Image (tube, rainbow over all chains, first blue to last red; front, side):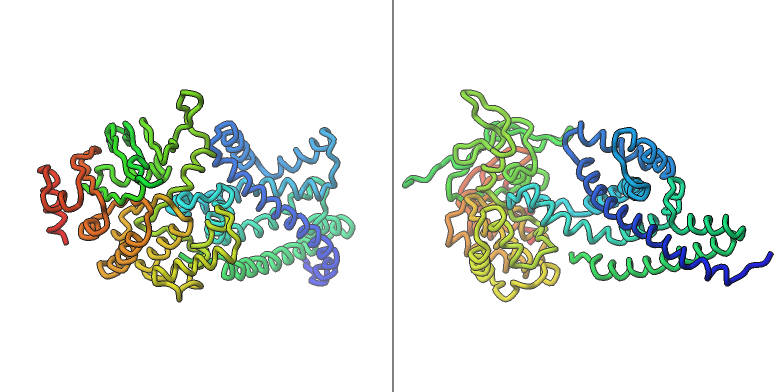
Length: 219
Length: 261
């Protein structure tokens, strides 16, 4: 087997185009996962069983089925119900929804970790439910879960090649496209792997910095 | 009002059990406006449950609790008593606050913010007014120099004094003190009790206290209720109850508490 490093470098411009797509999908998906995860966590805590049970079921359902299946599902079903979205938007949404089921569990553990005495003190001061959440509970719950939430960005980024299934061309898609033109697959795929590695390591480093800055709880 | 209202807080037929364990058994008693009443008795006798019910942290299974003519867990609809809405509970509860055994300060807020949070967001006071009052109260509890400290930087006794300032900041009519010195060393407990003695002397807030600090209870209370197995077995002035308890169970309880300290 001959492996030409020059083929790796030649693939880089395409890889960088793909990286932008992967980062866009990760970024949009992550915001969706962070927000929707919190919404799921709230709804699952609802006293109303008609809210908490269906949401609980939905979360378990999404979490227990493969992301790839969900990608296809949204890609083919959204247009049927009249929603036309680009493949990238559909992919980012599916990715965000899928990971929201994980972040909702993370939020739940963070919220459960706030001592009952904090809720009781909020009651004793007659704080409204909304104030109790925004000013007392979440400011204590979220710093606890920053490390876990940070890990999910990296996991999401590494799941972006699955978007290839719904025609989103990110790095792996770009590498395969080069391969089909040049009949050399190993170099562009190695290039893709290299970029995934470097970016994932960078993300891990950023996550640790964020963790150190915001992940501390004063107790 | 010139005469004191002898039935400011009323418990009527209140019953509470946790599983098979009956904590309060058909309990009825009342507390007058401005009265300071200490609840004593062995642990598990239901004292803390009473405070928690008044603070709406624990719901009674049966019976009614009244606060100045309003029911805490019920609303009058015509002649009928119906379960209270959240809004009603919130309204009645707004007159009551509580200081806890483990302080429960908000660790994500500085000391002053702990004290001003409810005045600003619940009472709707302007920020500068709430802060001026907060500083005054922190001064009162001897912590005027700790406004910008985080709760974690304070000793237990200091944290509890912040908690007392935080409670007073909502201008309560009823102050519930739940074993507020039980988690503190004797020296730190003493500084907290001194602050509470001052407050008892200078305000007319109605107080319900659960404490094991018997000397303090004797100093500040108008009345002492001795609990045993979910019932009040003795209801007397502190002089009477501590000097000449009538009930055998009270005598043995006081002996055990005094031996301890």
